Length: 329
Image (cartoon, rainbow, N blue to C red):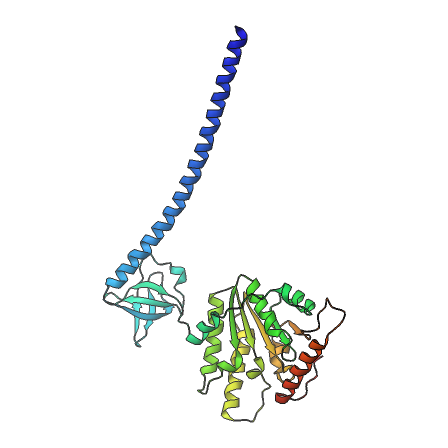
């Protein structure tokens, strides 16, 4: 009799413990669901506020685009409108005042001239196209013969100059950097930014570095840097002087008053002997120079085949048609 009573109590105890564990698991699941719902509620609230602002912007009669010139006190700013006049204005209380710095693009209400929105930096179409470059599926593991260069790139340095004959893996290294790093990437063909109008090339360089600073961390890859980075000289045509002005702007952005911060620079050329000394020697942002070895001769092979020699000879022959003889050391 006592044994049956004891077994019945044990069974009820086990059932009670099982029920308790089930309820605890259900409680934990409900708590996790409640936490997720609270997070989603915050996101929905932000989306709702943004939608409300967008609806008000669509229904409004229009806004004036301007640029913050100076902050007078805690509540007033001097804003220059795109049409020319300057206004002393206040701002909407919901806007973050810390972001209203000199040079910030803003939108003003047509009637009250109040700052109602902070606008992103105006991006040049050429610079925006640079940011859309697809690096492809290049990886460091798929690059042979450049083990030392890959190791140095992973440090990482402040800036890199890659040089060597055509077809030796300079652009491939930059593509691997872009594909493996979770950063913004700008691919710049230096010859493409040279413009016939005075000052346009320097403006594109300023826009490019400004975009990179606004989207840090960012890597800028400048291919064919010898197109704008050649040695400066006193005599020359107006086109040569424009290229020299572009080089001066590049040097100013690299080693000027404002530091690059989390913006890194990779330059590539097959004519290192023609580069201006200030570009590679005096600039503190180029602290590593690497020669790209012959890509066909791999580190993990102790021999070369006829195809490797044929490709190398063909590339060197094509290069000699367009270049003078260069010694790569």
